[in-house]
Length: 171
Image 1 (tube, rainbow, N blue to C red):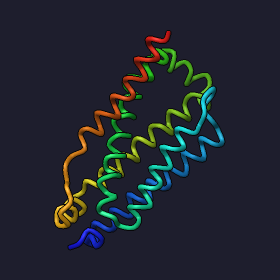
Image 2: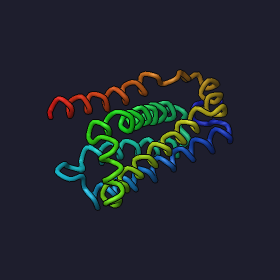
Image 3: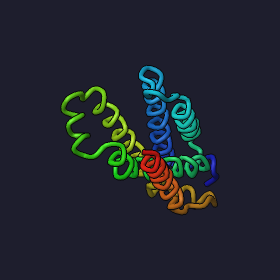
């Protein structure tokens, strides 16, 4: 089996993961343009989403090499997302203030939180698809590495923790 011709089961998973990445990127870019973050430029977020869309297009072409890059992208996003919910959000506002804000103005605080949670879940779906047995077997058969992307999880979580630390020290 060559790197350009994965099995049918692996190809299905690659295409599905690619489609999810492209759709998530387009939705997030749309949100960033329609509702830009208050006091900040939407450009950094759009650039990250463009990387996701490019990886998604690569996966739609059933690229086993692209699967590794997309797996690392998903792992980084998962690590970052979990750390944002666990560390960064409590630094921004104490949980009691978040609960009150969600009750009083859900559209302002709740919708972005739900979008972030949905993004995190969809990155988890992409990760699971790309770490599935058919894709891993196809990568191994093609002579491509199939290691767990632990550094990507740690880098994503570390970045969110650094941002939380910078915010906490800046107060």
